[in-house]
Length: 228
Image 1: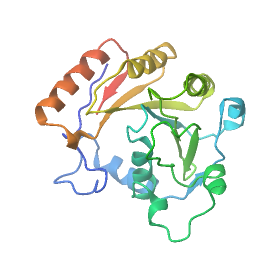
Image 2 (image 1 turned 180 degrees about the horizontal axis):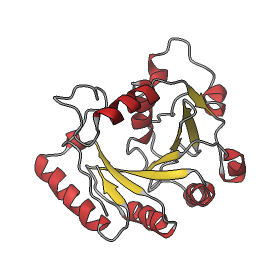
Image 3 (image 1 turned 120 degrees about the vertical axis):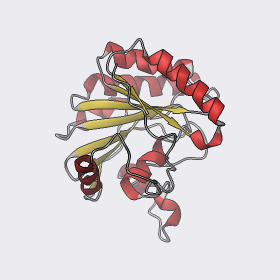
């Protein structure tokens, strides 16, 4: 495992408010990232387990996974649009059907476990970001939990272009068994894993250090893992 540590935290609402450039990115990489995310974004119809055969796209995939309400959609919308919930600032909103069938933003729900589909966003024909459904919501019915697991498992087995899975972990609650189950699944499928802690501004420095130490210790048994 090659560990990579970022700054203590980057505020998702204002990621450009940095005292200095991220140390883990070279100047060339920063320029490329700026140009890439300035390109047009192509959205696709949502997918469920039975329609994943329609997923074929030539660009490499980076998938975002995590427990319900960990902040996946918020992070994706910041990357794609520079806003955590772009629909919230639009005066004329599309119909609910349009927002679901051809989403141009990652849907943000304030009720855990509402995102039950797989959303894809292609950036300039160079990169596809995938928003996987949240998992680990204790109050969800068993059949709903099973459908989430089936969709994620099906995607991981069929996504030939998948280059990396970003596992988001809520720093306020730490690593849960469901997170470790996902990591085991990725390890078995020889997928590259990156762990990102979210909501780190809501915990004390001591609490964050404890969570980081636990994440690092858990990842020691994986090959090709990274943590930010």
